[in-house]
Image (tube, one colour):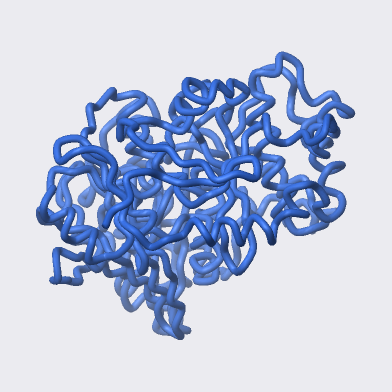
Length: 493
């Protein structure tokens, strides 16, 4: 039997909600139903962070808190979690340590963005390893815009509040809360609504396959970081939504000697360390992937299934030679990831078929990897060009290459002409690299838009070929890369 309500934990009590429209966002529920208006609506697209709340879920026997953009998260997605908003932090008339520190360091002026900033710092307070440095705090605040205060006093408030281990009502109640959340986990499917308008959350792959086969016109939602914008910005009238977040088996990571296999609903936060262990460039790419809020909600499978031509992860995984497993009913099939993308917003996915997992080959001893994200802003920005390169070397020559770009075509796309031109190139002879650089023009005819002109994209992509070869030849990361600037400055000092 399916459950017709969601259940979550709130202020030490279980809450049950039913009868809501499938498109209801968590922000609308908080402001319009609970009348908790401390959580603000700013951009309504997950960029400004004014709507940030914290969700606590049990992993490894304890509750872990993550920041979430309430404006693009569906209400149904908080099933089984503890919901914490700005109104919940003060206890018995005393401010939370993060709030007190914000007051002491004058971290707020108009206050509109402050609730979201405080909630991001609350999750940092709960989860971050000590001691903290400014870079870690800046990463945590990358998804929060401050319109008038300036970030220095906010960062100083974070350094002060997070100087020691967490000691607040939430950390003290962690074990009790974990047991309470475990009691909410019943393994039942959720179905709220009717056959024509519903929010569903299957608990197993079998239930998902059966429901999706019955309703192939339903919208699958994993993290909702993109579908949420369809609702808040596109005003799309989604009537059938199937959330994948409760499907057992889609949320695991298998790390073997030569392959990393990632389930479709593994979030970017959960996959961060595993993907980063493949190569340092992949780790840096993941650090710049959206914001902490986006990484906590968005999933690896959702980023692939979305098929965006400017998604950062797909080109990197294509260059690494990843494969995709798809499931339709009881049938599964495995295809190369680069074959999945057909045209803009069109993928090789049959009616009722869903992404199950992705297998990422690890680098061998003779292989090197480079990835570059070029964008106007460093933090939380969409790439103008994203290039990824894997070179299989025979001594100092390129024996084989896999190259993929995002932002250069209507899909994440391999540069097959460039790959062919790279074969036989000598790392010690830059004069032999010209043909591979020129081949970019045969692989792509990029479009111009507000992020970059077509000419700019073509030039950047061509130059990235040179950069990848140059760094591979030297075995060093150039100081022109943002990731290497601090190291270069420290070495100079």
